[in-house]
Length: 380
Image 1 (cartoon, rainbow, N blue to C red):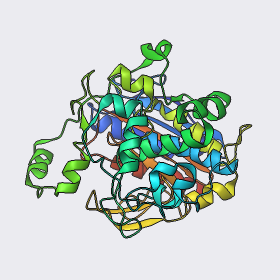
Image 2: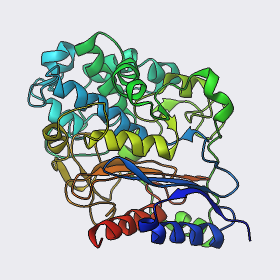
Image 3: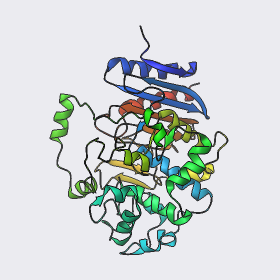
Image 4: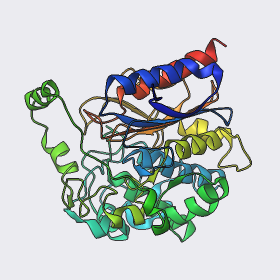
């Protein structure tokens, strides 16, 4: 019988590979890449199903935020950014309309009350985010900063990009390429070069079951804030080559910090391994990542209406998403992808499924595989 998963696996992690193979066998419409490193060394590097091969690159939506946060960590390490300074120290215009006392820490912890721009943005304004940043700088926050938190699904990318632009004079994507991706050689891009397009696999819509469709239809209506957040850009919502997904060449070339990352699970695990201090490239000191992984926001997310937990940019483990141990940091994506680092176990993890998985956010299979890998390490 032909193997359903291809690649390599350290014998210690055979239970992870076996479970991954069971998942692929159980669902012939499911494909995924899985990459796990232990103290920087590859221990699982597998791909299976008909959609994604080992060298495939695809879009991962909000997993991009965690990768973009590596740039913030690098600049904090270089003392170019100080988390407890007010944002207006670096970006004077931001202090308008009651935001003069908003700190960088609050901004990056989804507490600034800017999850939606005051007017509908064009896709061009999102991809070259200076105009979008001007809109956010001038507007009054939806809530008084620090009194609540809510997922800044798109705007956190605009805010990060402008902060980096103000302190470096160049783009977040340029810093990422020069200081992080290029030196590491990671197979994950914030701005996919055209030469890599032959490896790109389009993001495909989820294929929910009849029961899942019924569950979705039975959900209560979203409130006005959530509706505004997720309809804030004048672009098709589908996965067409004109929409906001990386299937649009303009989106994957720009590598928008919140949604535009393209790469492989192996690239993700390599980046997060570097965040743990393995390898020859230093992104930031462990103390910087510990600070960014300290709980900043916890409770009911004002935008999503579900329990959520953030450090600075990074999503942290919590009961709804228990992907790693205490001190872990990472991010999931709308299509089901997940990437993180766990300083306690030494694991770095990258997972990308295809097609997009219902209901969005980290695919439940990724959580199971991550917890199984941790069990292997903790009981070695």
